[in-house]
Image (cartoon, rainbow, N blue to C red; front, side, top):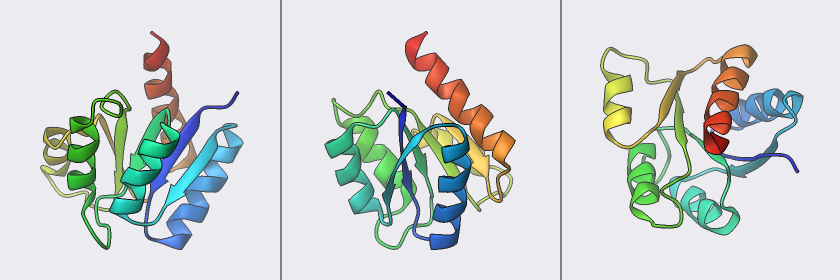
Amino acid sequence: MPYKILYIEDNPQNMRLVRKMLSVGGYEMIEATSGEAGFEMAALHKPDLILMDINLPDIDGMEVTARLKAHPELARIPVVALTANAMHGDRERFTAAGCNGYLAKPVTKNELLSTVAYFLEHLTA
């Protein structure tokens, strides 16, 4: 059974690109286009990993991450920020907000797949 990855992203081009990259890795991708929808999808599907855009149209990715980490059934799910926010200090800010990892856009297929594999391997370790 393939790993389920929830991608919370409001940009259709980014969603399509990541979907294509994850399909190469054999992953099942669940999609949400807003922070609220992402939280609901996480609660419904209990994915193995969440890729989180930070700049979302309703609540930002840091708030969604905080809510996920505060929820007893969802707190264990690794959250990787996948964002265009690549300024000095952003990685630390997102980590402090509860993200387990960070990838800057544009992301390469190798970066994405190796980061996803890293977090999924540590689920079973």
